[in-house]
Image (cartoon, rainbow, N blue to C red; front, top):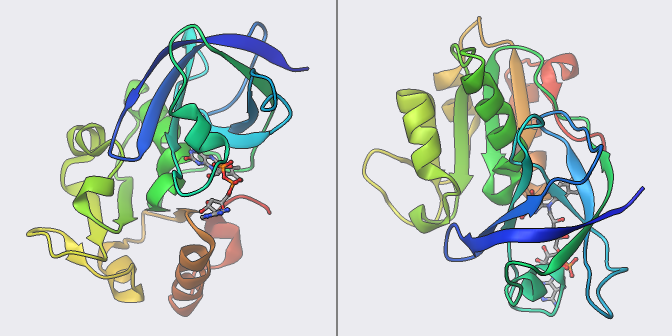
Length: 222
Ligand SMILES: Cc1cc2nc3c(=O)[nH]c(=O)nc-3n(C[C@H](O)[C@H](O)[C@H](O)COP(=O)(O)OP(=O)(O)OC[C@H]3O[C@@H](n4cnc5c(N)ncnc54)[C@H](O)[C@@H]3O)c2cc1C
């Protein structure tokens, strides 16, 4: 069932990512890592369903999304940039296969970080961050979503990989099998993967070359 809720706040998180805080729809339940169907409640937009991942935790009394906006065409994310507190969003079905199974390496590209924001925030709250690591790939330093949060949470277990500029202390280029191997450890059994399709393909191949079986790879099932 769809619920219409008001925007409580909407503000930039990076140069092209918005943080939206919405009223929590009544009766909604989700697990960290899951996403929901989402539409803007405005004429001509209310049937334009897109999918975004909760970055809030299920027990919080609001819901949060971190949304990368594409201003080069007139889609939903571009339209979001004109919204303000009090405007309405329709939240539909909740779904998604990504959830925490045990300690591992989280491999994210760009806005693919969102399921891991919820999962890692949940683990932090429960005091169970343990040895989990995050390898986060972006084009530039300015593209890193929730950089302060991850630095505070994970310290040196937060590894940045930047493709389009050299940043001291960060890996340069794409995520390679060597980078994954360097940070792997026999206690880190799971590889959590979310990012744009070319990254998913490349990292999937790296994991296969490192002998990781599918049973230990956690990603969306579509
Ligand atoms: C399960 C799931 C969870 C997701 N969670 C998140 C999330 O939490 N945060 C997030 O930011 N994103 C998330 N996404 C991605 C998000 O759904 C898309 O970015 C969003 O639907 C784009 O909507 P849009 O209407 O702006 O673009 P659309 O019009 O739907 O276009 C989609 C894509 O096509 C490209 N494109 C299409 N037309 C043009 C054009 N004319 N010019 C240039 N580029 C074009 C854009 O690069 C864009 O990525 C998720 C996706 C899935 C499947």
